[in-house]
Length: 144
Image 1 (cartoon, rainbow, N blue to C red):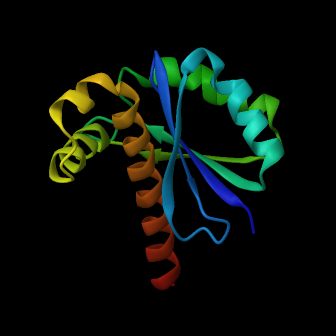
Image 2 (cartoon, rainbow, N blue to C red):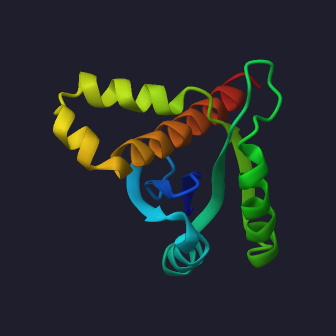
């Protein structure tokens, strides 16, 4: 069984999270400049067994794609072309940035570190997306 890689795509930088090999726990992985994301993902997948890639899908409250999906869609399309054998799924990312900020505050991350380490919220957001994906998958399996 391979890992699941999650992507919280941003215009400048992108947060990444990954599961353990048994696909039980989501862990923050890295934050990379978005212009290097494709190379990073391909390199990571080549060096590690990756079963799927989950990309945060920005949705509005009514469930329709948000305006920011217009800059995520080209990346998703290119990723599907460059890695045709890889399972790529989109997963609702509403509120993940707020949840990530709340988690940092609740976890005692000092305000100075939150300001200086801008990638921290991206990594935590990717982890929240991945954990949500795992939870929804587990709920789906237990409700069958």
